[in-house]
Amino acid sequence: MSNILKCITIFSTTILIIFTSSLFFTPAPVKAANGFYVNGNTLYDATGTPFVIRGINHAHSWFKSDSPTAIPAIAETGANTVRIVLSDGSQYAKDDITTVRNLISLAEQNNLIAILEVHDATGKDDAASLNSAIDYWISIKDALIGKEDKVIINIANEWFGTWNGLMWADGYKQGIPKLRNAGLTHTLIVDSAGWGQYPASIHDYGKSVFNSDPLKNTMFSIHMYEYAGGDAATVKSNIDGVINQGLALIIGEFGHKHTNGDVDEATIMSYSQQKGVGWLAWSWKGNSSEWNYLDLSSDWTGNSLTSWGDTIVNGSNGIKATSVPSPVFGGSSGGTATTLYDFEDNIENWSGTNVSGGPWSVTDWAISGSKSLKADVQLGNSSQHSLFVSNSHNLNGKSTLIATVKHADWGSIGNGIMAKLYIKTGSNWTWYDGDSIQINSNSTTLSLNLSTIPNLSNVQEIGVQFTGASNSSGQTALFLDKVTVQ
Image 1: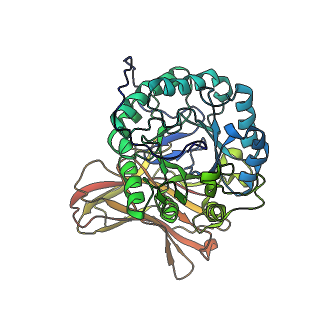
Image 2: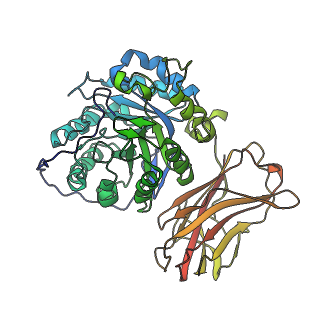
Image 3: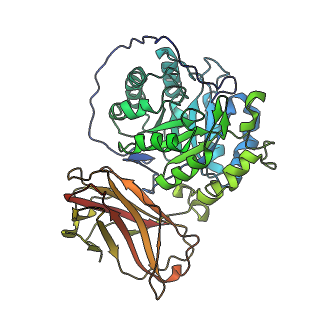
């Protein structure tokens, strides 16, 4: 979103962009060295812990002197991430390498992951604007290399204003390998076309953009304003269209209304929580008079939140309720994850119900290490299957139970397989479960909020319940790995 201009323009003519083609060798996917990495729908931090972004945008490029106040104030909300507007100098005053180093340090001091973005290419379609942003990242790479565990690069804010997915994809397929060839191994974020509000560009071409990354460490961003986030059905369809392909997604910007209409911010926040999708609200402060209803705070210090700010910080699916800091910062504030089960040695006493084979500890797939838990199942009309362990656990003081699952890439799964985490507590083995979400054949992260569950000192069982679709049939396999608590 631009403080200068933030309305969608659908161009009546398409600008032809001619790129010089080149060939790049694509090795097997690897994790970014010592940093964030994506696997399927999920972003993982350097500790191997799933990281769900909950944060706020800060317009540093236009308010450079206010960043030392704004960034600590954003941290005080409980946010785990700040997205920082930078300039490569082509439209706004350039942020030099020293400035970027200082911003990264300031975010680190406040236990915030920094998502850095170049704003000068906003709404533009020309290759030169995208290349300018890419050249900027390469020019400041000495400030970025070594920060892969605390910095994510959002290549260019809302580049490609026209609603044209093919040309958008061509631009990024040329640009991403240039960043990798320069030695930048960070997780990359690519905004959708159409000023960030044309998710069909990701739905149609996201896989090809992802595959252009030799490290397979790219995720995607939708900016949800009146077009991409105007109502519940649109929000859900746009999110599902990305994650059902096995791609990782964030809502890089969203508001509660915008120039040409209302935004369903409640669904954006609740459905993102249900699906494990990150989000970043626009924006802390500084929007011009036309869009000042998007200011989250009336002052840079955060002492006076606006109504929009109160929703984002204190709402039922807001930052205070859903944000978990990354353990990369260490200490109690880091929310360090403890691995309960990783199946590297054996099945670790796990069992299955309504399974036709297993469970086994296998090397077919793993989210960390080399093994996971696998069971064959016979799908039927809304059939239910479980993987579980009946061991005593004391989860007192823990906030979230997390596990990663997938189904095999074969079998007649129909409209999909749903899964949810559950626990049973107390002498009566009382059942508590998380949201049921559709899983895929890459990886899907499940979570269960423990903060309101009683008897956590006496957890009798931990498990995952899978439910087939009404039109599913025949055999497939289910996988589970990396059961953690934090």
